[in-house]
Image (cartoon, rainbow, N blue to C red; front, top):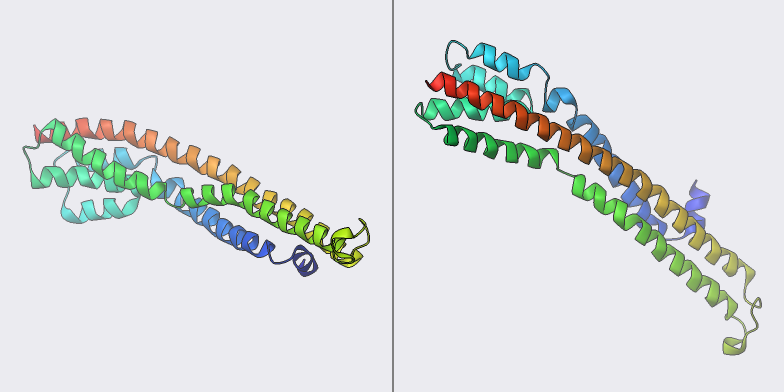
Length: 213
């Protein structure tokens, strides 16, 4: 592996950095976007059940907020009624939407960085390819100046230029393709979570309206 890195030359180091950062972000997103941490299936039903007899206490609301991302949305609804028992339906929905936007920003965190890596990696590979081509043309004219005959350059430099061009092109695609795939996967997963939260929050807003009455 180290011999390949040496053969690819210095242009491959930015690609290696992109691959390490991209892998770290992908692992982090896999951990953070687990269903239990974002939208537990039974959380809404449990929150409604706990509050059927009235608004839950501060400790219960704090535990709900720490439960998951959707728990933060539910907790914001409870706090709205605690702070203003006569809050209108529009106020309830506005507070739930505000909390939902904050949660959406957390769910979409680092997705832009993964998309940037997917876009930049092929360009970095292309940069390595251009540098390799420069090495090739440099080796062709290394002996004899401008009047050098093609093929009269140093074969070692010629081979080095070809290796830089090919290795960087291949490595750029190897970094970009998985990054693009995971970016699209995480985007679809976040969109599904946000849709589920939107539907559940609407149901929760109706439940809060009944508590107010």
